Image (cartoon, rainbow, N blue to C red; front, side, top):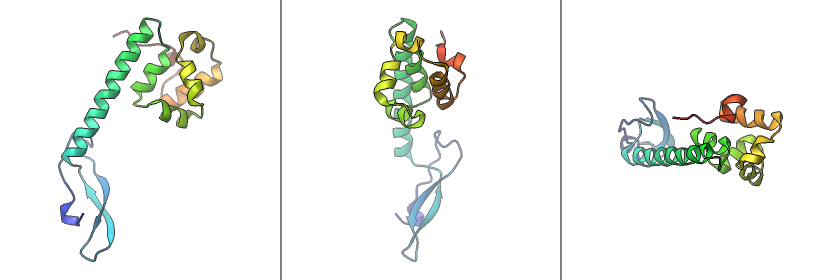
Length: 133
């Protein structure tokens, strides 16, 4: 893509910010050009956000029904999936899936809860709760 072809479609996702995009200049070399985003990127990002919100609502409903732990809800609320939570928390995927069970989650040590809370950007008390909207 050439410098003058870098899309400059303003959208909701970047909220007025710019992102760096590599483009080919007149000299034939790649360099960084600021972009305000483009329509296709906006559509894909909004679909991903909608899907994560839907998964969070499903997880919240399961947690309120006692079928899942609040951890799953908070993971989706923070716009994470199982892989990302495992990578950022340093907890194996299979252990996180096990922690999605309410009985197992209730027995987690304060250290493990603090680890999840730090990654998810909330307090341990908030991690133990699910908002009843």
